[in-house]
Image (cartoon, rainbow, N blue to C red):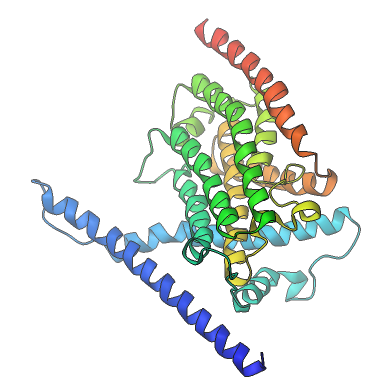
Length: 355
């Protein structure tokens, strides 16, 4: 294929992708704007009104902030890994490589989005969007002090969001019609069952200590510097192990095993599709860091931010320090060690709370 044919094919693929994103954006944007109008119109106490532009902009700003945070978190990861490995990290793009995330994003988005011949085209294109939407849904639970939206059962909603996040991996691995991607999807489904049970016991302990299901109230409960870390330090260790498995990070990155699965479930993705999946994965890492800080080191937002940065750095140091474990060792760890530890801690918490 000559150069002109490649350019025309790339422009056609890009045009189709842009049209699809526009259609999806118009649909969800119109639904989000019209639904409040419908509710207000059916209300006997208020007149029909449109959602103000300011409220829409304010609701979008947190998600834009998450996307920027993901970009600079990748820069932090590369800097930390370079320091640990005694080599140079990104340092050429702008001052100290600060604009390196924008360069990487532009490079990925300018690459051709190739759909394999044997892949299911519709689900193949939709899978990265599903992963990104699910990862961004969890950010609605951030404990804003002045938020108008208050999730009374935020803990249960977070458990639901983290549980369905594996469906994006399963979808992308299955529709690719590749042996390696399918094996990565099967690994993700199997390991999600193992680590989610100890994670559920951790939420049970935190909710039982606070007597609340809302992240805002759990954070406010710890404003007197009585952190849940002190009585639940063992649960924090189990939580960090479960979060590493949930976000597919080393040493539990089995769904992305480069040595045996050739990148795993995302092996057939390129260009913008791979970039969206990359953003979804790192967004989940930052969300898990925020939730860790809220549950065990809550209080004011300064402390929450500091401990979030500490947990996020823990992910990076773990990746640079530990090799990938064998797959059966994670299953054995979750079912025989972590589950027994959390059952013991749960019994102790129940006894202490009932006294």
